[in-house]
Figure: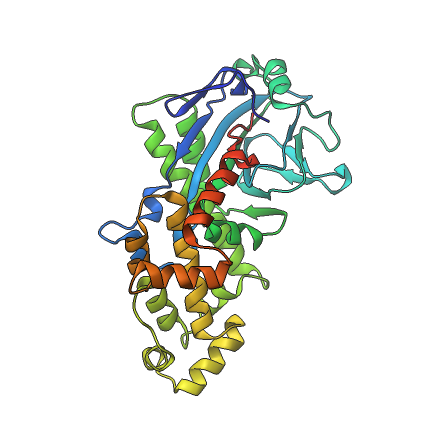
Length: 355
């Protein structure tokens, strides 16, 4: 969905990527302070719900005003799209307009990557490509038409397997309602206000608000969903919470089942049985998977050397880490990092534009 003539100037997208005269499209990179607790190393946060490590590698966000008729098609290459209506109404659907969901103020709709999705003033409305949509509605921002819809669209990219796994746990389309007084509603209002005009420090404010919006929305869904991921349900089990917190806070510690059982206040056998029933794997398998997930995230960023990564994820030397990584992935960590870098550069995740 990107345009070869669109350009990135600092953190603001200019040119044909902008939706209309009132849409401000901003590119955010590097995660957010929400997900980095002050005074706590990133590898020592308490992500028992894993949201703390589901860092967005970047996001594009726009506030749009459109008079009917209007419709917009968004590509399925967007890992996670976030939509909310500030004023008026809209409809969202995938392939079948007959299954469209209504977008109303106070609700947030998340759309996971895969098929293209469409937003329009009514189900089945003609939906334009982003640049055509921008051209047609370029002057709607000054409209006083009471039928005009004001809506916010966000497109997230995630770095790392933990963020990708979080997305896979979501349904294809998820709509959440925010009651009066719900922080989710307040964040939506703050986003709309912040995007209405350019102010000093705006990118920093938007960075925080975008991640707050996403975390609140996903957390609300998991809290109510009977199909929430196993790790989320297990984190609420008092028999397992302490052990999971210990693993997550210090993956580099040489944990053993007896030590984790003692932290949980259970016998070794009872802890191992409870852990497997809740998470579908043994404690040591879970620990290894967590360490490898952290290692892959560190390898992707390229910020740490092999010795530092090995120590961070619990291996005595880079050689021990490389051997464990090869057993887990079938190739050395250096080869994996090089291949992943090439894949990321060539993949569809580089599309930074919504409309």
